[in-house]
Image 1 (tube, rainbow, N blue to C red):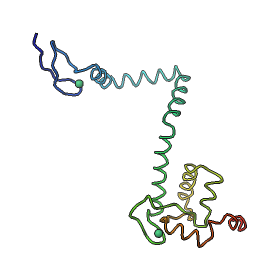
Image 2 (cartoon, protein in one colour):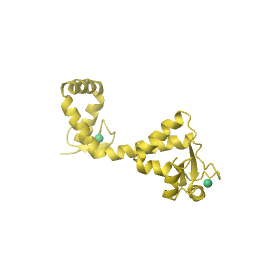
Image 3 (cartoon, rainbow, N blue to C red):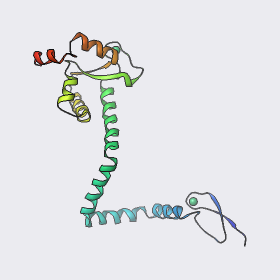
Amino acid sequence: MMKLKFNCLNCKQEFFYYYQKKFCCQKCQQRYWRKSHKEHLREYMIKWKKLNPDKIKQYVIKFRKKYGSLYQRKHYYRIKNEIFTLLGSKCSKCGYNKDWRVLQIDHVYGRGDADRKIKLGSYKYYRMILSELKMGSKNYQLLCANCNILKKYENNELNQFTYKRRNY
Ligand SMILES: [Zn+2]
Ligand SMILES: [Zn+2]
């Protein structure tokens, strides 16, 4: 028996088979069915969600356990990006803007590190900064790593004791 040539309806690739077939593989068949029944499936899912709220909760918990940190990291970079654009994405002392990885968000009055260590995880910390910036706060600036360290030495921010004595 001869194999005949067909085109797969889903992936449009040629394949050979003994009798007429629409799809090259089962996956293509499933994908094609899903594509052509999109609205039907959506309605079905909405009904199913209403009927099984507990299962949805379990799925969400599972999903968060598996991908939670990854999702947060994406979010984290998005927020960081927004902060950078709001602050002009360059060093406010020397104007360096070639590589964003060297730029750091700095509290103008030198509380940044202390705040981050004591109160919040860095993700929440960045979110707080972003909301403050959107309200028009001028407490934050971007500094490149060089300027940041120099500023810390000049202001004695590296010394914990002076920080405590000053009582910001
Ligand atoms: Zn195919
Ligand atoms: Zn600089």
